[in-house]
Length: 171
Image (cartoon, rainbow, N blue to C red; front, side, top):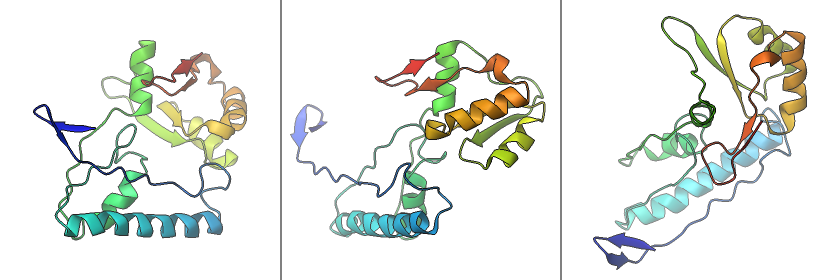
């Protein structure tokens, strides 16, 4: 229930149900087509409300414009509508804070790699001496851990799931 200074305001919840999460690779043409259709349909549902003068808030976890699903909606909606983005805390920043580990300092280089990268590319990038965070582990964890072991970077491995949320697990 939404409130304005203690007064309930009628609100509609519009769930946006993604067609895939981990079933297909992000490079699979079926995934690309399904997500393109999903974002077109979802943005149309939101625009229907906007043209009626209804304010819309899209809630998401983490930072909406950092590997977030909202960034695709934003790219469509901002063409014709005023969009205000409230930055959030990325999963890796929440994880580092919870673990009490600094991510990077002074003039060090910091990289963020998606665990969905092909294994050879992931290995090449992990051979650089930079500080690195790997996100989007999920079903890619065994592959990523194997690469980390091969390049000798398992020493600083701090796996976490649901960082800064009620489902947080680490270790």
